[in-house]
Image 1 (tube, helix red, strand yellow):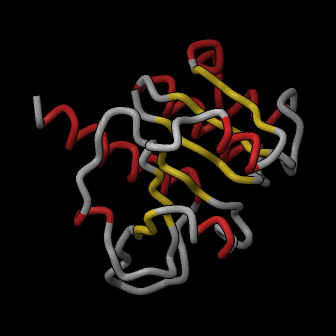
Image 2 (cartoon, helix red, strand yellow):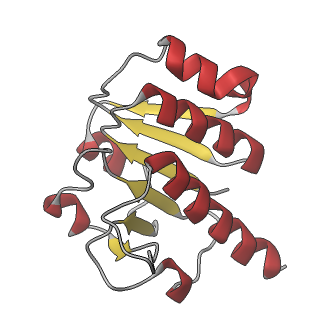
Length: 150
């Protein structure tokens, strides 16, 4: 099973869409506090629809608690626009953690230092992609690689 990790997510609609994507792929969703919304938020519920009941959703009060809850050998991929290595250059495996930062600022350096940083190329330029779109792209590439290896 793959794991999507959102560090301090800010937008309820994005997180609802991400939860829905995780549900249909069979990935766990880890949310690391603080959030910029409440899980009972209407936008979160509307975006996640009835898929919210089918997602494994884990809440963590902070980064250190999250890290202590997973294996020290776990592979942590940090999606960031501030690296050259693309997500096409790595081999994803079941059990990997795909980690994304908050919408307004991305992953902080002190977390990126603990991860393998990778990026989604933007050939036409631009600073970033929407968080829900980025998670969908990264998650489906990981699924493609894992299922293609069977």
